[in-house]
Length: 142
Image (cartoon, rainbow, N blue to C red):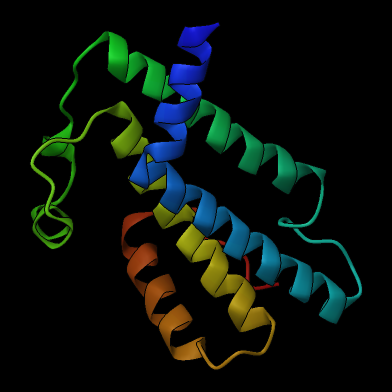
């Protein structure tokens, strides 16, 4: 039982996990505002969005456990500019996937902010252009 509390405390104290939860909260807030504005559910305010967000947090908790069992350094997969900006020397499984989830949520937050009518259209359009160079899976503008 003590080991479970130790894992919960480690998860609650992990700054990367805290940032993911914060990004999820912001995305949910803007998704709710967008749903109210459009008078319909969207990907943030429905069962699919809830499952996705809960799955992110649960996967990070399991990755935190894996990080305690095995030492993996995935810093080579993090671009140099991000490494220097954040000040990372090493990144485990939890940190690596946290960075990916944070990036995913930032894209969703900007999309929701744009669709809510907030003045971030220029940032959203630039982000979509950058994403368009590297992936074919772009978020819809609905």
